[in-house]
Length: 282
Ligand SMILES: Cc1cc2nc3c(=O)[nH]c(=O)nc-3n(C[C@H](O)[C@H](O)[C@H](O)COP(=O)(O)OP(=O)(O)OC[C@H]3O[C@@H](n4cnc5c(N)ncnc54)[C@H](O)[C@@H]3O)c2cc1C
Ligand code: FES
Image 1 (cartoon, rainbow, N blue to C red):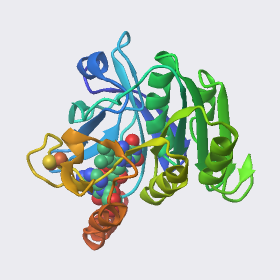
Image 2: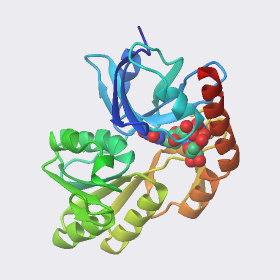
Image 3: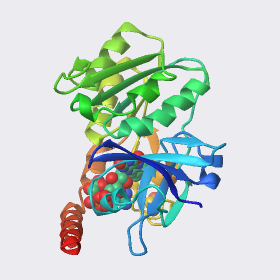
């Protein structure tokens, strides 16, 4: 049945899960860079999640999410065989992929899964893909195996040094750029501070840098204005003009501020959800 969860894998228990969902209409059209907007229940909010992979033959899409608040916690409560109430997509512009060159795809945290689909697109177009992935520690690292299936180089960093390079992904990126002047593009998906740091790192090298912005979205079709971001001093809507933009031209300070605008309300809503679940189980 459409929107049914075919499989669920708890990648980091209680924190990050991967769902493979039956969604043949979305899978048939999904391109790297696209996302879906879903709703878990009748009065639930609409949340955007990147399509981390799509299999048009099986009619499935894959999403990977971090439990951040109420809606992702409700999604985490679903299991194999459950259906997602609404699933809308594919949304957003597909990644612009140019052929012939070395492309460095940088992913941080849950962003590694979202970056995976983009990296796969570059590989299919014949580009040499270097994946640079980072997490706080080894147990929080996602999608290394999946990336190794097609990327000839997968470089890993962890903040605590428990695996790979001890430090940040931007240190590996700088080293790679210093050693290789044939890099045609750098793509970054992850937390806003990471994408901002990637853009700052690539600027002196003059390398095209694409970032995938995770601004707050409501309708996802360009009508509500919730997702507005400033790029090159112009207002753009991330849902229809993006979510990918030139990282050297994004106003990251504004993005950070807008993402935090509802934090107290989100916290309250999440705490209420947790309390209600506790009461129900009594
Ligand atoms: C295009 C796009 C793709 C995304 N892809 C992924 C993904 O693949 N995996 C993943 O884990 N997360 C992804 N996100 C972020 C994800 O949408 C939020 O984590 C989710 O909406 C949080 O909802 P919540 O109710 O659980 O948390 P809340 O407590 O409501 O919010 C926690 C934080 O999540 C963000 N957020 C909240 N509501 C929205 C919203 N409607 N739209 C965007 N951000 C919101 C804000 O930064 C907020 O502070 C993506 C966001 C965008 C815009
Ligand atoms: S989410 Fe409403 S305009 Fe982009």
